[in-house]
Length: 429
Image 1 (cartoon, rainbow, N blue to C red):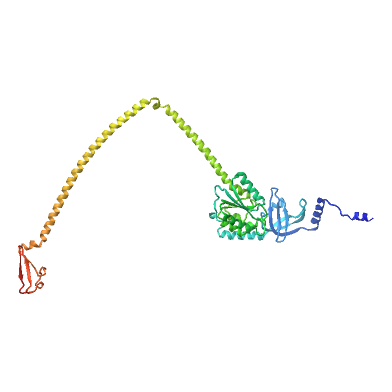
Image 2: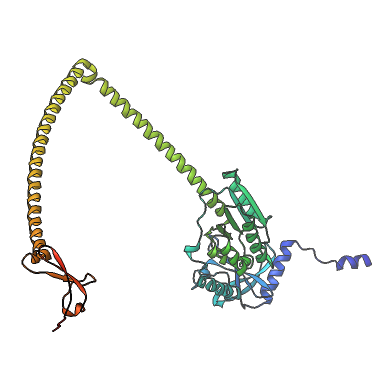
């Protein structure tokens, strides 16, 4: 009897599908339509046209979906970080056994806290010029030493290494392992960038991780990471998330790659382009050399069949006649020039003689004039006309009576000779 009662008290055994459908029915019947306000995160829009996302606040999150029919009527594009109000019903996604909101109407409520922080830091760093194209460093043409700052266990490092090794196995890669999400991740990333710069010897850095929600990628929006990228002396490629994800790190980096794999392609792609260009130039040079050889061969064949090669004696005779003609022309030319130079020399000689005569005549005439002036100003010529000059005892010419004293001996010079006298009396007017 007890065994029968125990058997009757056994709970019903459900399959997973049955239990999930029970929960779904209970949830849909027991909870009326809801309006939830929160921040969008991990927004995904596959090719089906539906839109999947998470609505969260500081303490919890819930999945949500808006079907294509309602998605078409939205006046905005859902983006991570938006603050929204979602109107819909609760249900259970049976495959995952998780509950979600089927959104019937979605209204934009403003910017979420993370998005607002993102915009504020973006404005601040842009004002400082950290996004300016002029400060961005070009990637090296042929990088051989590459640094990678990312998680050592994530898909990003595997993708990067696979591409680098497959394309150019001789590249040297240095990995700085860091956390790429969660508290403290930003500090680790910034420290790793500084460490690789201090290490030196690297041509380019790849900084990033695979895709995720805005919370997962948030460490790449931290100011310390942005400033570490900005002060890096090594060119930095930012490879964070998927193509639609943008972070502050992307704006500060020297180059943004849409994915980590694309970053690896950018690094080795430039080398590949260079090698392809060398191969193209090599092919062009080979083609040009072949063309030059063919042209030279054709010219040789044409020359071999020419009159000069067929009749070399006639060619030599023609050149001898040309040499003789040039010799005669040269002799006549030299004789004519000699005669011309001789005539020019005679003309110059006559002009020089005439010029010298003119100079001598002019100089003689000037000399006679000077001689006449000297004669006219000669004081001795005055003496010859009956005048005399008297000198006092000091040898100075006496110009007035006051220049001598009574009893002083003076000398007088005449036109011919001189005499000495003593002053007896002075009368000075």
